[in-house]
Image 1 (cartoon, one colour):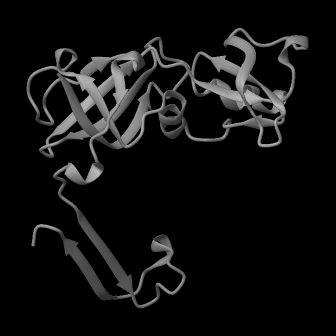
Image 2 (tube, one colour):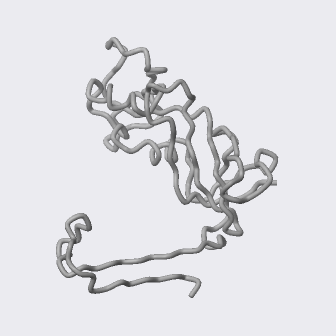
Length: 192
């Protein structure tokens, strides 16, 4: 049985190239009842695209592959897909491969596009650990275990809290510059 989950955030680790740990993408999800699930996705491969032919270049060892892409530019110019070991490798090489595409998108967001993970995904319940609290061990999956879902986002029970604090000198909306007295606090809690 597939379990639908709403992705509320994403991240990855390790951030540093100095680590010997494998790359893990962290999907912070809510199940249909609003319970938290943390999904650790292994075997994700960072990538970007370029219009420059990389076959004539001496590419660094961290480039895993450079092959003709199945996508093109909006003007139908063919592209090459460059796959690397770690997201931090992309800034090291992207200028060498200018013009480039999707090379400046933060990886935690780009990975969702690379693998087609929209707001609602599904994972087979056999791949998920029992439990549903913040203290539960994360679920370990690969990109192949994550499927698209037909469940509408409106079916998820989520708690939301918004707040806005205005100060007397906050005319430019720069919180770091606001030092005046608080003149307004607006709070919206969907449960109240």
